Image 1: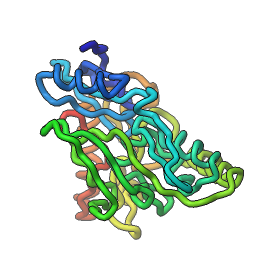
Image 2 (image 1 turned 45 degrees about the horizontal axis):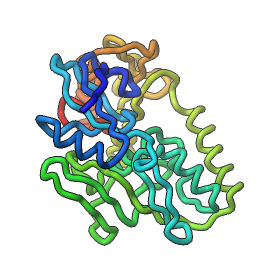
Image 3 (image 1 turned 90 degrees about the horizontal axis):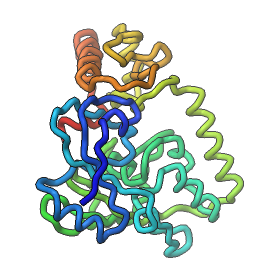
Length: 289
C-alpha cells in the first residue's frame, strides 16, 4: 500500500519530532482495510496533530490519518439537529456547517484546533463545555483485534479530557445531537470564540495547553507562573511569557521531541517542588503510543 515518508515535525502543530514516519491516508474504507492488512503492526492513529508531540525515532513507524474524503468527511442529517459526521472533519468546520443548518451547541468549542475524531478521543472542552455532551453514538475500528468498535451514549466512559475511546480505536464517524439555534446568532457566537482565542493564545506554533488544571482554584498556568516557568527554554521550544501553561516554537522550525520532553519535565518538577502538586500533561507523545 502506498505511503508518504514524513518527518514527525511536519505532522504536529508544535513541529516537534525529528524522526520519520510512513504516513498512510486511505481515501475509502476499502483502501483502509487493504492498508491495515498490509501492515506488519497496527499503525499509530493520527488526527491533525494539534495536541501531539512527535518522536525522534530512527526507524520510520507506520502512521494512519483519515483524509477529508467523501467517506471520512460525510455530513448526513438523521433528524432535527441530529447528524452523522465523518471523523476527518475539523471541529471548526463541523460547528460552522451545523450552524448554517440551524443547529447549535458547538460554538464554545469552535476555537479548538484539530479533527472531530481527535476532539472525541480527548473529550475536547472549553468554556465549561465538553464535546461528550453532544455525542449520541460513535463507530470505529479496533486496530488490535481487527474488529468493529461501537459506542452508545448509555455506555458512558467520559471524563475530564478522557473518553471511552482506547488508543487502538480508529474513529470513523459519530452521531452528534445538537439543539435548534438561529444560524446568524450561532455564527456570531463561533466568530466571537475565534476572536477570543486569537487574543488570549500566545503567538507561535504550539500544541495548546501543556498541563491539565488540577482544580478550578489552582489552574496550571498560575502554578507554573509562580514556580518561575515563564521563559524557560530548550532547543526550539520556550515557555510563553504570556501564558506559563503554553510552550511555543516561535521560529516554527523542526525541533527535537527530546528537548520538548525535557522542558515539560522541568516545568512539572518546579511545580511539584514548590507546591507538592503533580501536574498531568494534556498532550499525547508519539513515543508512548
